[in-house]
Length: 138
Image (cartoon, rainbow, N blue to C red; front, side, top):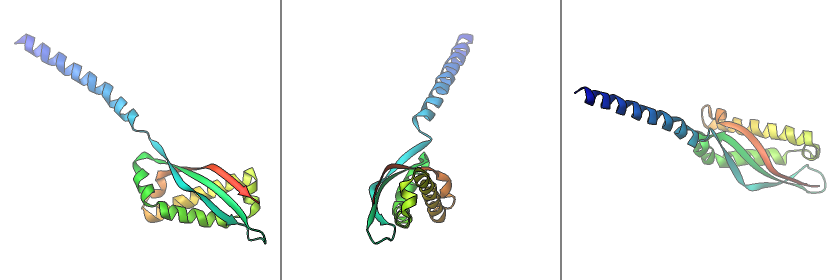
């Protein structure tokens, strides 16, 4: 009888140990953040001068992994907001490094605003916005 109790305890300890090893590994399989590549690229004219000028930008969003589906669901609203923002830019905002960084931060705030409006607290799920391609034709 004593032998059975010892074997039961050893088995329970072995199972607990194996489960403790699987726990962190399972958590590591799920990344905290994912990237959502918005495609196709944004192509829009900008600056209301006499000559047409074009901007082509590709945007990726870094989002909380659990909210990826929500971002995909609201992608048309996000794209619309970004098209309006990009087309309203002056040339100075697009041709300098400081201007592009300012535009990137403004675009991030606009996306967070859209998500906050469409999903209560959805803005917390958008971590960052990146330009992965940025071409200006003057």
